Every structure is written in C-alpha cells, then in structure tokens.
Image (cartoon, rainbow, N blue to C red; front, side, top):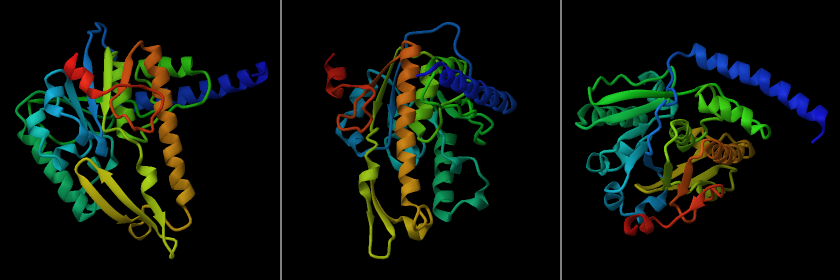
Amino acid sequence: MSIIRRVLILMYLLVKGSASVAKTLLNGKRSRPDRVVEEKEILILGNGPSLNELDLFALREKLDFACVNWFAVQSSLFRKLKPCYYVLIDGDFFVKEEMLSEKKRDSRNRLFNEFNMIDWSMVVITPQKYRIEINNPYITYEAVSTGRLYNDYLYKFMNFLYSKNLAVCGLQNVVVGALHYFIMKKFKTIYMAGVDMSEFQVYKVDGRNHVLAEYTHFYGIDYVDCTETGSIPQGEFSRWMGYYVRMLKEFYCMSQFAAYQSVKVINLSENSFIDVFEKQDWKELIDG
C-alpha cells in the first residue's frame, strides 16, 4: 500500500474514530474494561440448528453460559441452564409496544416475564442508551458501545478503541455484540455454539419474484414469504445478501480484536460458515 493511501486511510479513520467516540460518550453509560483480569471462560449460545447436537447440561457443568435475543421464550431450557449472561441487541426489545406486531409484542412480553421470575444472578448486556424495564434484583446491566467503526485496514487503531469500549465494529449479529463484550472484558477463552451462519442457504425466489425462506433454528422451523412480510422488498435481494457479507466481515474484525486482547475464541459449530476462529469438537470439553 502506498504511503499516500495509508495517510488518507489514517485521516479517514481519525475522523470516523472521533465521530464514533463522540457518539459513545454522548450515549451515556457503557461498560469499561476490568482493571483486574480474571481467567474467565464463557460459552455463547447462538440460535443455529447445530445447538441441538450438544449436551448443554454437561457443558453447563464446565462453563458459564451467555444466551442471546429470544432464547428465553424459544427454549424451555432457559430456567434449567440458568445463564450468567444474556445479550439483547435486536431493536425490537427497546421500541414502544405499538411499533411491534402482535406476535413480536407477545414474544417480548413473555421474555420480560421470564426475566422477572429469574432467581439467579444474571448480567443483561444491551447497546448503550437502551435498556429493558426490568427491576429484578438478580439482574445487573452492562452496555456495549453504539459508535460503529470499521475499515479493512489499520486494525490496531480500531482495536484500541474497541478495547476501551469506545467503538464497536458493528452489531449486525447479536453474537458479534456478545464477542465484543467478552473480548473487551478479556475473558480467557470464549466458546461459541449454535453459530452456524448458514441462513443464506435457505432463500428461494419464486415465479412472482418473491423471496421465500425456510429458517431453521435449534427450536424449530419458520416458513416465511419475505417479500410479502416486507423484510425483503421485491428487487432488493442483493441488498439483503450484502448484510451477510457485512456480518462475516464483523466476525473477521472480532478475530483481529481477540488476537489484540490475547483472548482465545473457539467455535464448537463444526459446519459453521465462520472461518476465522479455531473449531473444536464440543465433546473434547466434556472429556478434558
């Protein structure tokens, strides 16, 4: 890369970085790096179908769990597994009720009811400036930055801001938000399970040019006409697929951040399309 191009990229990142830091500071409280770093380990549970292949109860005896988004209402295992962390990134958790469909409103109310009834200590992680109105004394709140900063170059500059939680590469996927938090906190080892990222394979385009999807999660299958629901307007499939590219780039960014923080990230989903983290058979954790 030429010196001139490096200088231009650096100037761009300085401007964007300043804007991201300013947004973070203006959006109020955020979690800070721990001064005393303990050798903690965590298992992040995604919602991919491969989660069904694991013995979660055996793994729970070895590791603390972090659940994400709708897990508490989609699985009866929530109260049995008693996760120590819960990550909420989806905007549907924070908007006014009238902005939600009846189905989403019912799901959110059920999730909040689950949170109201927990009787174990759990940390709820959200984007800063957003929080849920649950006052259960067993719940404490943490927040990740909302100042987005991502570029394909000069990772050291970005990683420094990530390490202070002054910026985040993006929150295209809830697991990226979870990784950002645990890497920022310098957990010794972060395991991921049910993070298949294979959803892009489920789309079809029919004779009406409607995009159809068959979403498979660990808790079941949803059949959706994405054009009819408005999530993928006709003629905008290319834009939608671009989100998957962005998501995979964010996972790559988190792999660079993990290396910067000397944090090990291990993917327990053998056939996951995320190719930037070491993969391991989950049974080795049980036998080890």
